[in-house]
Length: 127
Image (cartoon, rainbow, N blue to C red; front, top):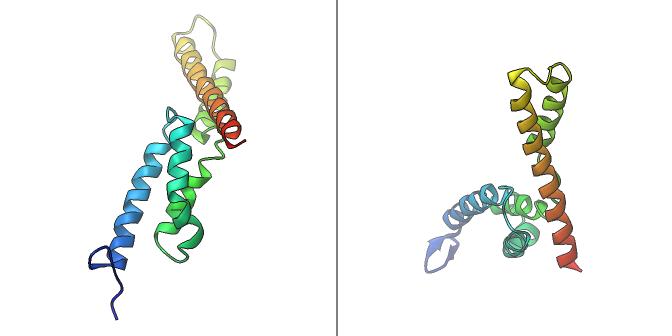
């Protein structure tokens, strides 16, 4: 027997389409400039799929959205910061590459600071 939802659609087709939507939402929400309130609302919307839709292709994608609530600095920012710090140790301030790596270091540090502020704002909003 075929499981039908939403006006006769096959449930598997609906789950696959919804999983693709959740994946696109996840990609957008990973952007560093997403406001914490937007992230919170998206996580609330995905929560049913994350908690109750066992075995569905939607569940892992919904859980990845909820995991964004516990924002930590992006690995890319941490890696860039470490890389630039290491490179800068060996460069003279007069070296043209110094200014570039210093700029990249500041960019990574800004991203790390922004993530910390977003996490703090989300924790305050939960209270």
